[in-house]
Length: 78
Image (cartoon, rainbow, N blue to C red):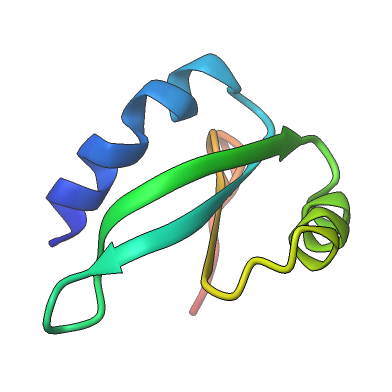
């Protein structure tokens, strides 16, 4: 389902590169993966999106960073 989710988000990921994106989840599949989303806002500061979601009383949110989470040349250990 990740591929389908990426297709839903792709236009916004390209447009707002380097920013956090807030989506309202409209519909999910039987496993809980978002099937339909509504783009709400973008901002470089993730916490601003929390404020927006609270102001708009959005119950089911999806927040995604549009860009590389780990900068090039860096590595992460999980």
